[in-house]
Every structure is written in structure tokens, then in C-alpha cells.
Length: 176
Image (cartoon, one colour):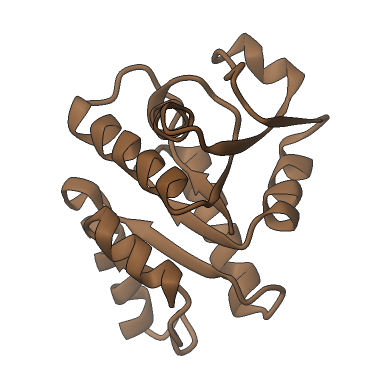
């Protein structure tokens, strides 16, 4: 299974998050899955990729070449797909992935998360979307989504995404 990871590339992340991302990468590789990610060498992306590569796993990095000006790219990817734009990157994530895991991140990660659940809601894919809520990072976002539903801004939330607090929960969801 090709598993797409959305998450920050920041170098300023607390170790509690990057350790969890590394562990996730180890589990992805040990379970014979391939990591699909933004190709970054740092942050959540880099930690997860390192876990995959340290366990002889495969990875597909997807990024525009110019993004290397903002963050270093991972050289150990099994395959690297160069695109011109961030929209192309997100399209390639959808095209090359069977499931999505959202880890803590910033604006870019939220953009990717909301796009992938919107596409699922609009029946453009039926792939598993799992939010890895490391150290309760996404609790406030979940509260906001619940509030939007209570006030009538959202249609029924028919299991568009799942939440997990551990790698074991994620792997259980992926096994279905």
C-alpha cells in the first residue's frame, strides 16, 4: 500500500513529534508499505522518511525543484517525482497514494488535510484518511470542526476521516 504522509518540514519541531513520525516510518516499512511524501529531509516528513529508510523501506518523494530553496530534499527516496507547482504536487499525492496520514504541521499541512477530506466528501476518492493526533496536537481543530457541524456549516460527517493517537491505531485502521 502507498501511504501518503502530510506533515511539517520545519526544523524547529519538538522531539516528541519527530520521534513519533520516525516510529511511524519504521512501522510503514516493517508492514511492507511505501511512503509517499513531500520529499523533505527535515521535520515530520524527514523523520518519517528516515524511519522508512532505516528499515529498508521504499519511498516516493514529490516536490517542485524550487522548494529546495526553503527546505532540504531527501536524497534517499526510492523514486522522486519533480513537479512544477504545489497543485501538481497535491494531485500526484492523490494519484500515487492508497491512504493518507496527517501528522502535525502548519498551514501547508492544513491545506492538504482539508483538500483531501473535501475530495473524499465530494466522492472524488474513497481512500482512508487518518489524523495522527500526536500529543493532542489537533484537539483544537477537532473542536472547531465539531462547532462548525453544530452550527450547520457542515453536512453530515459520515466518517470522512479517522483519528489515531498511536502507530498501532494507524496500522489497525490501514489493515481495515
